[in-house]
Image 1: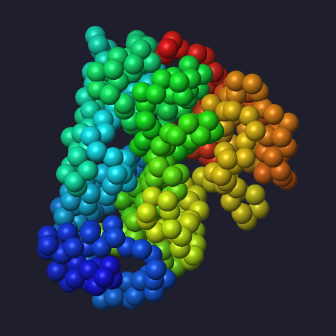
Image 2: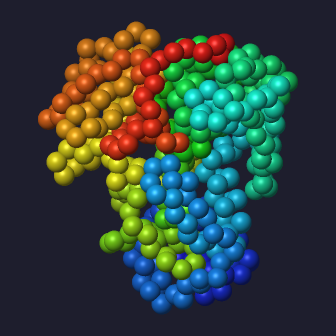
Length: 384
């Protein structure tokens, strides 16, 4: 059904066909994924792509040169539907989400002055309706965050927190913030705007937190989200080709783009406890800046499940053959973790830097080889 609905959409991208396609994307069980990819590549060869589209999107250039690309038709439908499904909690009704914006480390925070923090919230009705998007502009140089969260969660009930990676990196480096998450019972989960960039999951996952590690790349269509059972899922809106990745729901010109984020997808489907079928995959963001050893990438986001100590931050920043290991841990790095990291980075010179983290533009990645916006030593602000 998915393949047939893609064909109908390519021949006639009417709104009815778009709705049918979206339904089949959500219902797809990955049983015939290899055949689907081969067939969709074949009939795309005869597709006439449209240069006249509804929307031109611009990348923010946080990790590379800013670029623009066309998206359409029905661009607003696709943006709202995919972003909503990937970023917001699934199977939960009436969930309220506080959207955290500026942190004290933001380049604009010193210029932003608020007499009071403003807040609003998402309302998720669970019926495919668009949530009402609101924003909290929050400058942590001026206001203590945790008392504010306590006050608002008392008013609104349990909350999800949503924000940019560097906001959560900053918050996560404070013991008070993690203690609040674990002990208050007022925060249900965390929704980074991009993939999970730091190692705070130990303890939080055991306590039942839903941490939605997620990504949507509109250039290529690559996407994934993390369900409440800590399984990563992706929607079949892209296909990996020999020299690029094609966004299947974009009929604009230049349908194929070079590989930016690398997806290595297994061909063995599994059934998740959340009820959805999925294909396991390895995701390596921004391969241009990935940590490399000879001809291989060093990227292991599962290391968090094997760490012995607790970390508020753990990053690997490559400088030639040297890798800086930046970490913040309340009890220090255990010998077990020290040996495991040495084994992970075997053959490279390693420099351990305690109580520090790095900002890499607006993105905060655990593995990085490229320009660094700034190193920060841990200096606690009052957030509790």
